[in-house]
Every structure is written in structure tokens, then in C-alpha cells.
Length: 254
Image (tube, rainbow, N blue to C red; front, top):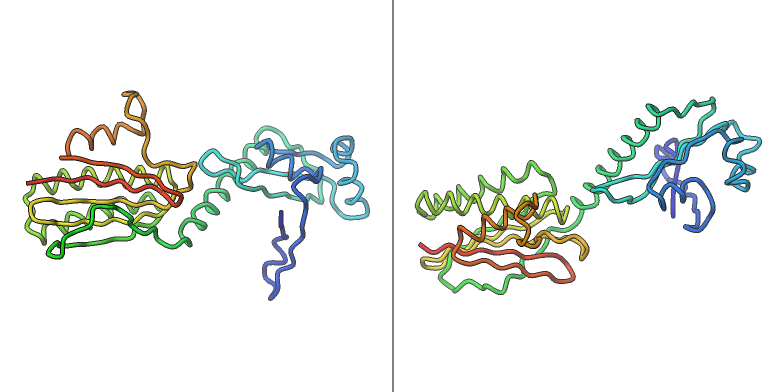
């Protein structure tokens, strides 16, 4: 793992330090367990003798190692070296944990936003005379509104009736929300009008362990009822997973 200190970030060249994932230090314990490791050096000495020995002669008297958490998953950690004694009571631990959650969320979002927009790989290819509109959606819950506005505006320009438009916008909203919640990534939208058939595709770039579709067999499942809604409203729909992400499309025929 690599880490650096905040005072180094203003330098022209950032100096990185390295620790092995198997080093017995508070930071690796916090990342492995997902729980904070906090205490004065004398309290940590029995558990981390080598680490504490390296702090002797410095101004450090206490340490807090906190996991970075995003979407209930530990994705890293941060460590604070204190020059004054700390109580590390329940309130302080809670504040440090919340900072870890905030930093983890920001890191996860930055990683996803920097990623290239996913490429639509739907096997439903439009005919030469079809009309196509596409939109890249950022990995931000606020982007769901932009996706709805995009599709509503597009279908109005294409002369689609209000009932079909309302249905398509509702279904698109569910699919984009699923992509943002489950895949935690940006997604690409493609709308195709081919004769009387309207096909809307949402392609996310999620990891293999984060699916944007879930089983429909549990009616009480919070994330999944949106797909039940899509299933009940559209002519047909399908989802497809691959090594890059998930593609979900639905068809409405007038």
C-alpha cells in the first residue's frame, strides 16, 4: 500500500511511503477489520511493538487508524498521528469514522467519474433508418433527473405520444437509479426509434461483483421492485452481464 502525509501534497513532487499489506501496523488492522484502531502509544505497544518503537523520538503520542468506507465496503484507510494526548471517547471515534465514510465516498466517486463512460454493447442493433440519441450519465444521484429530462425531450422531438413517453421516462429512471446504486458507476443511455418500436438501453461500467439487476422473486426487496415495475410496463426487456458491466434494455411498441 502507498500513503503520504498532507503536508507533502503541496510539494512539486509528492513523496510516497510504502507498507506491505502484511505489516503488523494499526492501518492494516483497520483496513482488514473495518474497525478503527485508536490509542496512546503506550496502549498500542503490546499489540504493535515494532510500530510503536519507530515512533519513539518523534512528537507522536497517540495514533488513530480509520478505514475508508464506501457503499459498506472498506476501500482503504487513513491514519492520524497526534502530538497531544487524546481521549478517543465514543463521540471522537464516531467523528473519525464519519470522516472515513465521507473520504471513502469522495474517493469512490472520483474513481468512477474519472473512468471512461461505458460503451453500449446491446445486441439490438438499429436498422439504417432508425433514429438514435445517446447520453453519458455521471456517477451522481442527481444525474437521474438529467437522464429523465434527456429522454423526455428526445421523445417529444421524435413526436412520441405522452403516454409512451411517460412510461419510457419512468422505466429509464428505474434503470439509471439501479446502475448508480448497485454498480456505483457512470452509465450510458441510448434511445432508438425504429419504426413503431422504441428501445432504451442503459449500460453501466460496474465491477463483476456489483450488479445493477437483482432477482425479482422477493416482492419486499427494496432494490428490485423497480425492475418489477419495468417488467409490468414494457413490451419486453432483458439484462446482460459481461466482464465490464451490465446492459439493460427495454422495448415499447406503439
